[in-house]
Length: 260
Image (cartoon, rainbow, N blue to C red):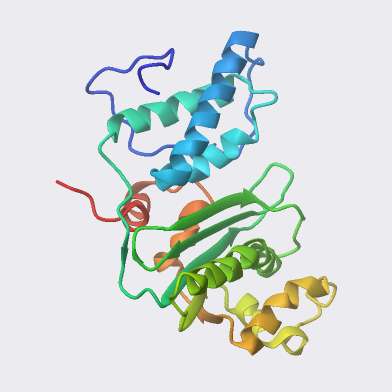
């Protein structure tokens, strides 16, 4: 990909993170010409393949760029160049998976409230069995939410099908799942998911009943919900462009152990 990209980087070109804080902004600038649009679309598609298989640390950035392939502008192009420069400076990074227990699955699901230009929220999720992320998701929510609690509930609804399917898949491979843990950092949403309407206040009574599907799954024993502090919430990485020490911490967890 680096050899084929029209922008060439020097050996010592460095980029600490794949995206800046402006990632979720639509940005300004003229629309790309036809040739640049084609290149933009092609390389975002290549990144989709790469991030799903080996470089989950770039997944949040690629998820946003993939939503811009129809009408990319100069701002989108600069975001792609930054992503490519980051990839250039981290070529040796790879995904390393390990399992502490093949009968325990851990899901970290989070949501960033009203971060998109249309004030929709963003869901992030990571699944691991020990070291490295076996699955990850980063997606814009389809509904506008009225609170961070509502956004967290929608986030769990976005992830629940994958959570349950993965359990069934593992059990069909001969590994009965003893614990299927879903971690969240919002206590209000955890109470709603565990207790359903019993914990619903005035702000949440209008929530569609399908968001309490997870309550039924908890009661059936198909998963448990536990609190995880935000500083240890892997899913936070998939909801927005982190920077600095927090970015480096979660990248190391998601990508797994690296060779020196």
